[in-house]
Every structure is written in C-alpha cells, then in structure tokens.
Length: 154
View (cartoon, rainbow, N blue to C red):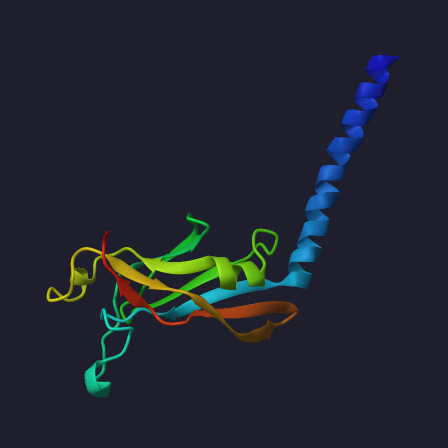
C-alpha cells in the first residue's frame, strides 16, 4: 500500500515539471527581458574627452555585471567599445535590484587600449533605466551604464 502511494506521488511530481516550464515561458513573455548596453571609452576620466575631444572606444574589453559580489553576466566590447548583455530570465533579477545592487565592472586594464593609462585597476559604473521597447510581443527593458569611472587596484 505504501509503495503504491509513493509511485503515484512520483508520477504527479514528474508530470508537473513540464507544465511548470511551459508556465515559466509564458511568465517570461509577460515580464520580458532586460538589455544592458553601452559603450566603454578608453579613458580614466569618467568617459569624457579633454575639452570635448573625441575619446576612442575601448575595444576587446571584458564587461561584467556584478550583483552582490557575484558575476551575473559578461560581454566583450566590439571595435568601437560597444557591448550588450541580454538578461532573458526575469526570475533571476528584478529591475529595482539591478539598478540598486548591481554594477558594471571592466577588469581589463586601461593600458590595453592606451599604454599611457594605468595597468592596475579598472572601470566601474552603476546602472540606469533608459526605457522600454516592444519587439513583436516581447517587452524589453533597456538599461545603460550611468558613467564609468576609474577605480585603482587596492
């Protein structure tokens, strides 16, 4: 008698898993995704060129999304210093937590893009909400760096 109840319970749990995944897909469509994108410039001066001079992008730099000391996602900048990170699972984050508890870190030494810049330390930026986009039936929350600044290695 006990074995019969165990088998019945096991089958109910096993059959519920695919339904839960299907429901998660619907929830994912409703809550949408977040796209964190921006540009990392080759400077230690808050991403601003001297006297408005053009500052080149930091190509091939690693950009990390760190929340609570853990790396959640990462990307590599293109030749112009642009990067994009798509956050497809809304259950792993919420917008408020992303904006208040997460930072973008660039651990790649600045000397990689300009030998006159420091070889120890990196760039950090908080995040800011930019807006919402709709692509077909999907909602996309757009997030950007608020401005990178240099942090020396301590």
